[in-house]
Image (cartoon, rainbow over all chains, first blue to last red; front, side, top):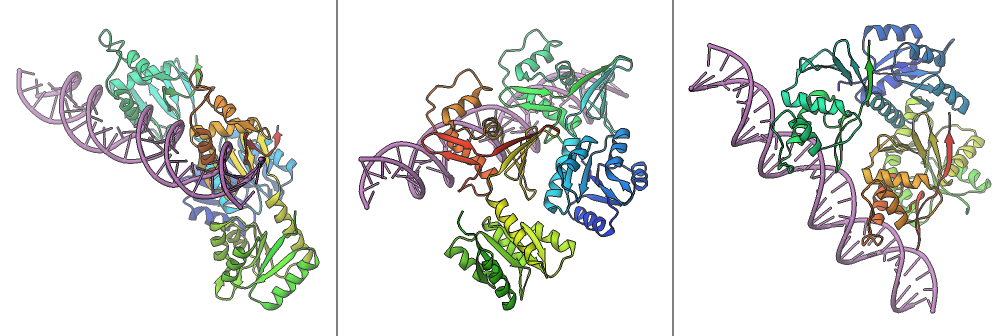
Length: 245
Length: 245
DNA sequence: TGGCAACGTAACAGCGTGTAACAAATTGCG
DNA sequence: CGCAATTTGTTACACGCTGTTACGTTGCCA
């Protein structure tokens, strides 16, 4: 994944500078902002992965801004506040903040929260099937079953081989159900010759899974969709929606 | 608890004397020190519950000393400094100080901070479950059940293995209740195949507990949360709160 | 205090998985 | 049909997790 782009929103210039500087030192891209307008401008001008939003913004109210943003888009938000009272915290969660951190905070804790929220945000996406176009949409990807090709979130196109396509179809037919290597192999060979010997010698399925992961997972090393069920087999762990439109 | 033993570290003799005297008048045992060597000597010679550490120690650097100490032991530290700038405070927290106080300080404020830190350090950690984020917070740690990972108070992240996660879940389901090795093993194998032989030969649970302790206890040698009940088994001794938010 | 049982844990071995590198099979195209 | 490019399967090695063993330490009781 590319470097996460964070938006640091605070009306106190010192705080803003300190936070952006600290986040940059730790490998993030941090952009400063101090009002709701500036937030919206940034959102229009480029990708933002996470917003760090101060609750007290002069005459504006961070909680309200948070609620507004949530109504529009689904960008993760961490609320930052000098008030650690519990009711404040609850109000934060209620408007849909992903986390809450009190000032003054431990910088390492901030980092941990930021990383946790970012990771949570990119986890298990849902799967949608559009009857109209006969396409699957999952994890930001679009899969055209007719043309055996896949289009990534940023529009990049990947061609799947025959075998990879077949595997993907088997998995798409059984979301959330762990399939053993034998089951997968059997399903794949339905089209092929009669019966495969029940004891497949090799690790063909493992390698095939690896190759499919390399193509459709953002982080193949830490797969979010095509997961391993140790001692069992593999699962496609996405939620399914069918758009009948 | 016995009388808390505090170590007052400052290179200015007046300051040192004033602080120790004041703390003694208020019921503490206060020991003076003025260098890193002296600190180490004191730590070897007897129990120290809290260190009040001046940031400016002539040619030594309090922040560095703090970081060093933290790497070795888990004694609470309050940094004292003439500089109140926020980034100083952040630097302090970054190296693991428990609190930060600026000179000149209100003596009553110092007392309050000292008491707060001491209490925080010795109190039985509590356990909270936040439905919203599906996370456990216990003993300063945050445990994300979904992702099998744990975030420590200072933001360090630890991944738990499958087995460790299972153990932690079993324990979290039975706080304050001592569980025998057999009970734990049984609970762990619910997911696994039919029945384990009732007499497990080995010490698998002991080793597993040890490994989990190494990850979630600040002082694995002297566990505060995952305790041994000699002759019985193990207990998770934390208080539970559920935030239903 | 000595002796013994319970406990902690380092070291090791077995297993399942990921994957790079190679070999075999298949496909596409002149 | 022949040949190159691509796809597919096989093998070998590395790595992380788990349970076992062995030995040192701790705590209890006579």
